[in-house]
Length: 63
Ligand code: F3S
Image 1 (cartoon, rainbow, N blue to C red):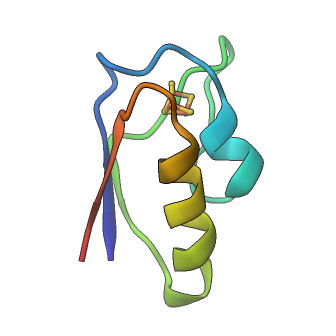
Image 2: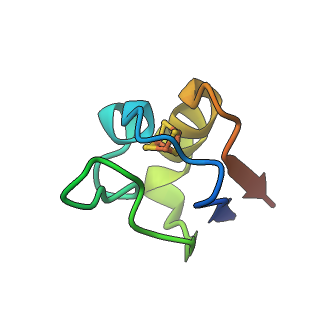
């Protein structure tokens, strides 16, 4: 599974990192610091929860 973050859409809510801090690393200003990542199977559930929690729908989950 892969996640893709639209960094233009990210507004720095940081909710993604609450659910999956090992996936959604934040920069110094609280914006998501990654653009895409292959998610290890053990972190998929948390990564999906983090994507669902983003109020800007900035995170796309690709199987
Ligand atoms: Fe950004 Fe959404 Fe996370 S606005 S910091 S991708 S919760």
